[in-house]
Length: 94
Image 1 (tube, rainbow, N blue to C red):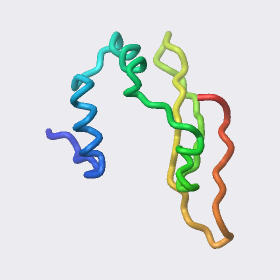
Image 2: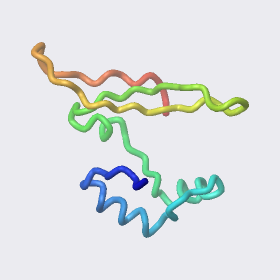
Image 3: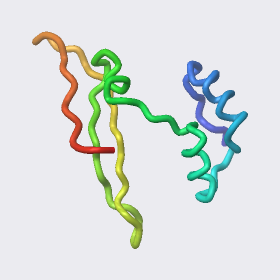
């Protein structure tokens, strides 16, 4: 079974990532990736992208014995006839 196709716009980003990050990431590598800045930190303004996205923080239970997992959900807005869309306020810190 082959992996699903990726969005073509991701091709350039994936090439850059492949130069810096191995194809599989072990837990021990996460701190080093964060330290070198490859993980990136986007501001709320960057995430809102001219109101193209809503930003929501959700928490879900982790596996048994593990902590909860924080998810950053950014669905695209759907147009409405009622006027411009406004981003929702974030539920809390990431």
